[in-house]
Image (cartoon, rainbow, N blue to C red):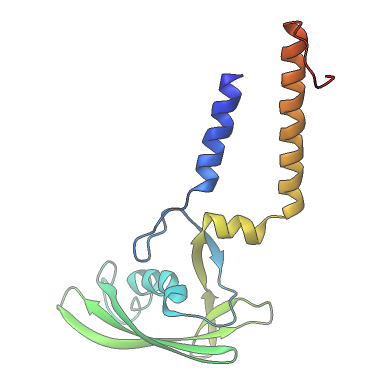
Length: 173
């Protein structure tokens, strides 16, 4: 019985506490496609930082890997289903900072896509807290069934415990 109580206490602690993430940290977050109607710099930061660091300048510079980093996001200009995100980039090799931007469009399926020279370069992802992820992407009916099954399980364990120890109670169990 003590183990069961400890298990439920641990689960309550795990799902009941939130974590504060550092700027653009993925700790305690789940990766999802970006589907928001109005986007912000933080929504786009996960995708842009990774893309600039790994792919954006691959065709322009030799040995571009680990060379470019987004230093700061300047602004987001959004008009309906299109958006331009402006930022500054640090070139580590030359120790120079320059301005750049990326253009995004929202597809018919509701997911934002990076567009380069009118070509689809990939769907944009972001990270959301685990709590928000489960609230959005899981069916509340599923969680109701889990709560109901847990309640029945606990009730049966208590009933079995009381019968085993021949204890009388006032509940009529």
